[in-house]
Image 1: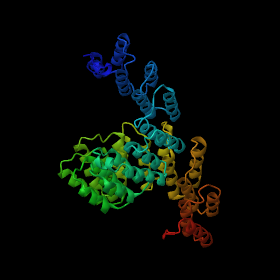
Image 2: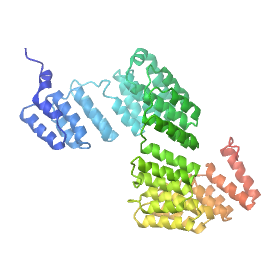
Image 3: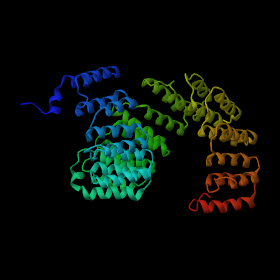
Image 4: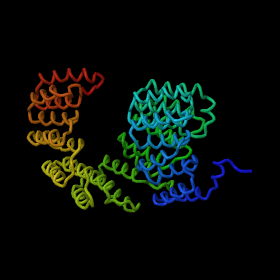
Length: 490
């Protein structure tokens, strides 16, 4: 008995050769064989070929499009592959163009595999209007209640800060697919939901999803743990970590960085010690978190131990990733000699390493050297960004260098076309305020878009206190009471 066309070619030698391809050149040779043997219209074979092209020739959509266009009547399986590829690497307009072409094809109806990557592309672009159009299409083709489609929609609305829509998509999915949710052994959808609520800062509903899960994996625990850490609830984060049956490197890293971010460096080091007793090897992220912990403690002995520990663990301490963190650590632990040496021996100095060194110099009162380093960075062809100008302006504000501050501010806006942020204005207000130019600082705030930001007003209020200007201080205090009525510090 003759097998169906697709099944017959499952064992075809050309398919075996295709699966063995490892380079683009080998793919092109197989393509020639496909043409010579007349398999250009074999949907299964072409689908396998296109999928492999996406892996071995990333970004070469022109070639893949030409191959796809040679198929006279692509089926929905082929169209879905093309949709997914374009959604991952093309513009949103191109995605809609592919979808329109698909709808114009004969006997091709979108299914539940057509839309998840489409809605994901809308979420990545924060394209709310376009995403709602795709949502409408899922309803039209009756796939909106599919469990993966529903989770994709919830994730999309979460990214676009549409909290109510995200929650509605989740709630409707839960109601309509109770059996599907409970029966699922794949944790991906649940974890997407947890992460979506975490992005919205909605810990209550994230925990609700976590508690509903029939089975939880490391990703589930780590996602919720990270949310608790970001909210400052390290007790809940630690409790969740202890409850996790399987602790991987990511969960250890999340707990350690959580303690560091919440100003608990000793607890971070204690957790690292526990990790070492479990014979878990650290990665770069954990090491950098530990260096931040050492920086917070400010112990030179601990910093020296950390540097030695990095070498013992065979990490490249001269690489830019570690070098900038080492510079920051030794500066905050009081050794500018070691800080300077580490900076100068860097194989390649980037923007981050320059900023770390400037902050170190500023921390130790070496303002002129910090500004000279900023100029050296520019001379070496490294363009400063928003953060670099904040570092430079902060340096000027420490000692009230008005002329240097104004020069840098002008350089930022004119030469580098950077729009000043509230932090930049706060630095300028601080510079003017410390030098006694309180009225000029007051006018600067009123003339900009930062009038409703507390940071600039707070800097000016401190300057009024420094110079004893009670009258202006009372005016500013009333502004701060309106902007931050709950801030007791005001």
